[in-house]
Amino acid sequence: VSFYIQLSRNTPLLVQLFFIYYGLPKIGIRTDAAVCGIAGLAFLGGSYMAEAFRSGLESIEPIQTESAYSLGMDRMQTMRYVILPQAFKRIIPPMGNEFIALIKNSALVSLLTIHDVMHEGQKIISVSYRSLEVYLAIAVVYFILTGATTLALRARLAAHTMSASMSAVAADSAPNQRFAAHALHGDGDVAGTAAEISAHGACEKCGVEPWLNRARYLLAEGSGEGEDCVVGDGAGDEN
Image (cartoon, rainbow, N blue to C red; front, top):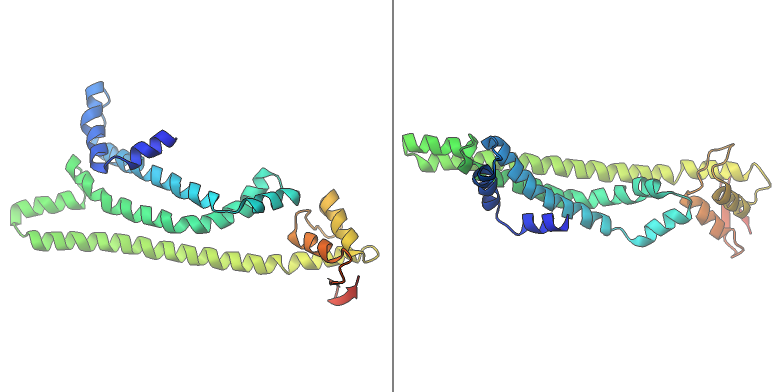
């Protein structure tokens, strides 16, 4: 994988396209020009996408993974609920930049006789000799395509941010109410309740998961440090 990424990123796209279209037939691999163009763009774009995902995943602090494991999550749960939601938000900007770069780089596939916007524009110029107007129209087309992609990615990022905020609010309310109800099942021992949930899994009465951060938070508050624990209707019971 590392060799593929280095090869793709350190060689020009035009060289890659010519190698696929003109070089591979020399060893018996013949494909259509459109397939060669798609393969060349995918070969280049895949390496940048892989680096974007790698950097996004590595940007998450290792302590978050360790905390998820300590709360009872397995590897899949940690990746799904902790790592990926945060990494995806950080991946969107570089991924959007690569999408826009691929759209602009697609103009090079016209050299493989693919009938794209650039190729058709050159055909019009060869007949009308109106290069200024044609190239201006081509620039407007690419501007619209890249602009629409930018707006779509911004909307996706805004929606992801809003969804994450709403999830955080919901996670801070409903689970806490279920946890308080679980504490009231017994003698109101919040610290014992947190320890029991963390050790034995979800509560059969209220469904509190073993890896809720709130459980560990209440466990720390109920450790005799003089903090007030909120149970039930919000009344403080001093430990």
